[in-house]
Image (cartoon, rainbow, N blue to C red):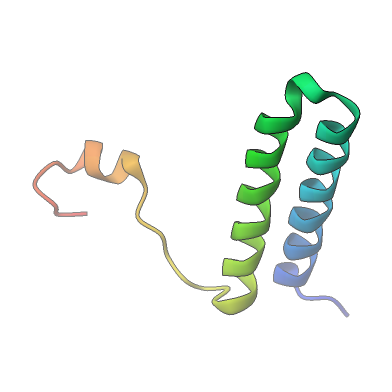
Length: 69
């Protein structure tokens, strides 16, 4: 039986592949699709290395400007 994290990682990797393929077929979108693919791969890597880890988000800083997040 697959863990939820394994399914999420697989979905993220498939999305990255989709973005790379889309960029390869449309040169006007290639740069943005490359960025998207890199982002999805990076999140998949984080899920593999630390599935329960946390990441500070920009919205955390905006919601808690004094650093109390």
